[in-house]
Image 1 (cartoon, rainbow, N blue to C red):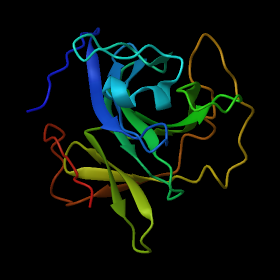
Image 2: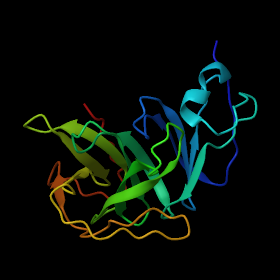
Image 3: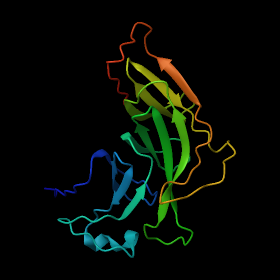
Image 4: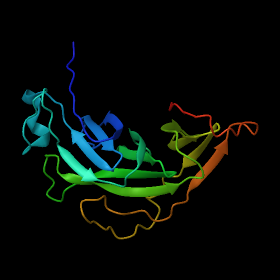
Length: 208
């Protein structure tokens, strides 16, 4: 039997679990519609101190935030996965305004083992239609492909080429994610069938 842990936030739109900090440890991620990104570590107290260090031990009946940061608002869907094949997980978020953003966790310069750092924006894509779901699939060469399903049985492949792009200087302010937005293109649109254009039909892709 497991334990049920409850945390009540404001208008949560995305909840997931994954090794978002690339520390070989799964964390619970919750993002609100207002753009508040929350991290929880629900490890039992006996195994808890090695990751969060200076943070207070968690009581399973009273979960406490391990980290909080503000990112762009109007979040809709979320994915935690390695989308560029570098062996590190990224956080991908789809928004209600046809935008998809990719973030990566970066540790603080101190380099401690505790959960100290921030989300950094890797790229922003602007799509022609709304975002239904996010998934990662293997391309023809075996490399990961970031795919976004869209209404009317359409989908788009998002090119994750930030390693080849010249990044603009980072900007930080009021706790929001560092900016690396750059170009908003690099989107390859596809339609699964020329006869299907009903935008009222929701489409979801399942990664392989």
